[in-house]
Amino acid sequence: MAELLYSLQKVFTTYPNGKTYNIPEYQRGYKWSEQQVRQLLDDVYIFSLNRDEDHFYCLQNITLFQNLDKENYLNVVDGQQRLTTVTLLLSYLESNELVKDKIYYAVREPSNNFIQKIIYNQSDVINTILKADSFESFITSQDEDLDYQDIHHMFMALKTIDSWVKSKTDFDKGSFTNIILNHVKLIVNKVENVLEQELFMNLNAGKVHLDGSDLIRAILITRVAKQELVDYDPLNVEDILKLNQRRTRIGWELDEMNSWWNNDDVKLYFQSFTSIQTGKKETIKFSQEIHPINLLYKIWAEIKGENEITLYCFEKEEALLTYQSIVKLHRVLKDWYEDRKIYHYLGFLFAHTKMKVKTIYSKWNSINITRDQFTNEWCVKQLKEAVFGKENKDTDDVGYNFWMSKIKDYSQEDPTNWYDTTIIQKILIFLDIIEHSKTKEKGIPLPFLKPRYFKNYQEDKEHIFSGTPRELNEIKDLPNPIEKLNEYINSLNIEYESSQHIPTFKYDQNQWDSLVEEEKNNALTEFKLIIHKRRPVNSLGNLVLLHLTINRGFGNDQYALKRTNVIENTINGLYVRHHTVNIFVKSTSSKDLNNWTLKDVERNADNTHSTIEEFFKSILDE
Image (tube, rainbow, N blue to C red):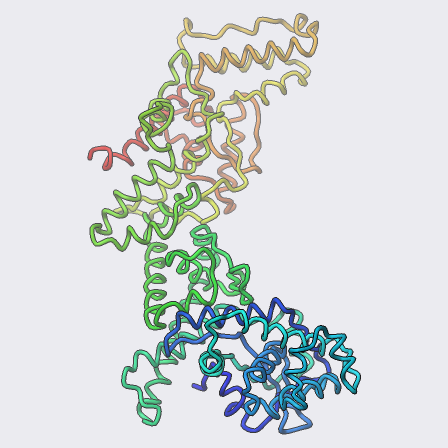
């Protein structure tokens, strides 16, 4: 395997093998700003404070193309800005001999003449530039026309370098030059079998982009293999073969990981595990959309305590340790993803809490916890708090005990209006988690829940037995509202003793027609309150999440229609929550499959209570 990264020493000596880096005519001129030059110097300086002999700072890449007309020219298709900057820097550091005859500016003759004067320091031009009060005064003092934008930027780059050096009281030119030459590296891409102009257009249109994952790959492949071969001898053929074999294997391992992270469901599942982004000052981007393995690197960075991801994150420890920890993390995350319980428990936690992956990973790696304890105790405790809130001794309106007592209060004088509670959607989704996380000794278990369904996905919370204000208000627009309203009241009385019946509506049709709009609204609001107090229409047992495409309607006769739509959507591959499906196939003890009565609501609430209680039983018995 050819070397992937080259120190600046090699970039200007052995790599070109006597050839010159040519900045072709189609390139724009040099235009790095003072901020960009200073940022480069700051990054290298910070790196130098924490490095060891095996560490290096990666200055991204340059892309080269063999000049077809001149054999001794390598056209710089991409990266000329950084190549020019380091040329100016090395000239300032008096390493002129290294860069002589190594760069040629075909883009503009005056620009080439100027940079050559700097490289050769003709007429002590560097010192003249540093002493100049301004660019205008400098070009006025020269015998040639230098009033070009790229020459101005070269002038300012040298001034910035000098200003930066003088700001460092501990600056050691020899030590810093050594770091620049031997510990700052470039990835050199020499491209063949493609049209040069097409390559340039693609690079500048953003179609070809060197990403952070490319650089991490290069760093790991080149450094880890050497660190594993403790007694590596570069002159020993057998050692060279071992090194290349190991580099090939590391590359294969990284490709295998990248392939796994490229799965759409994997990406969607883990994207909620971290919110870490590329550092604001980082010029190298870590795009997980283009390179999915960057999601693994972002999770790794967060676990390491980083607030943002930068290439420097991967330079803080020995490459072998970094690689080993990345591989370990990948295997753990893959294990979680493939474990039915862990997959669903963590998916719900990250969707509904501010849980940090660092906390979970630390708990997983604790020597004081087994896999079973992590899954069935620790995760279950987190779920209990995520669904119901943390128990608070100072208030009794939060926590598991409070909400569980509300599930079966449908027969009380003032039952809970679950429709308007803050946790209704969360608890309905959680019922799905319970069912999908179950394993079966016989038969086929439910499929793993798709990542998007850990949250509400194009769904409405919906009454099964109608009773929402929206539905009641729609009565006013019907041609025979009182008749429909009394039909609804009759449906409310099914399976109830006559002594518990709700009487017919207090207005007949003529009386209703004589009311003004405000009086009608007040009458319906009053009626709604009566229903809520005397029937469990807003009970948890009467609520489901329904896909937006499923018809909503008023009255008990709509249950059969909704049931048909639910079944059709399920058959057609549209996801319907398991809890919702069970409602519409009447998995209660009721034998009436075509109607949903208020007694069904009570039975469903009781079943829901039992399901949740059974799930948390193991930690409640402690």
